[in-house]
Image (cartoon, rainbow, N blue to C red; front, side, top):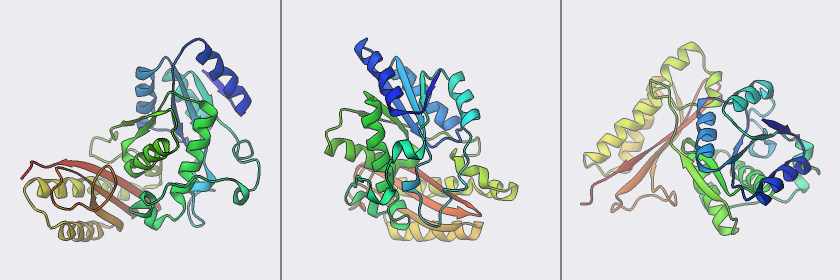
Length: 285
């Protein structure tokens, strides 16, 4: 596996592959990798003969009271995992390489409407940081396709909208959430959980499952389902951020006739902010 730190080195290698007629798949990450990230790499390798991943802890997507300074940087360990997974090239730029001027003076990419709900409602500016860095990375890597995890479903929807609106020739591929045996979605922030909190954490997924079962059984009082779920999470020891039932493609509130829904949840447990979501298929009435 080749490791590069500059845009020039990255473009030199990708250009050579493209001239040879090879498709390129891209997996953007912030590092501190787990099995979920490696599953994205595995999917990328299935879809293209050349694979690139990036590791960059993006300051633009962290709020003033969030964990940017303390976010784990584990480049050496991550590199070993990626090499073992068969990755071709790792791009690990510095902040200065990605943002050569002060952040406030850099052009940013904003997708309207979609970032205003769910995680975006409590993490103002977060998704502007995501779309800005992903659009820059797409321009640097020039991939044919890019692979993202469905655990961050809102992010996936926003990136798909951005790519469509900007006519970017990148196919956005989603990969189902990878979970522990007890249902907890894999996340770099799971490392913040104490042993006691780790035992509580799967309750988030179980609460999503319970709401999905009630929807499939015919319940349509979405507000009541959401309120009950937040009450249950608080009783288990979480600080709920949201628990909401939305349409999967545009993240709007359902009108009642939908056959495809997605349930979203975010809650704090100690230092960790956990997110998860679950698709729900309903039989037509």
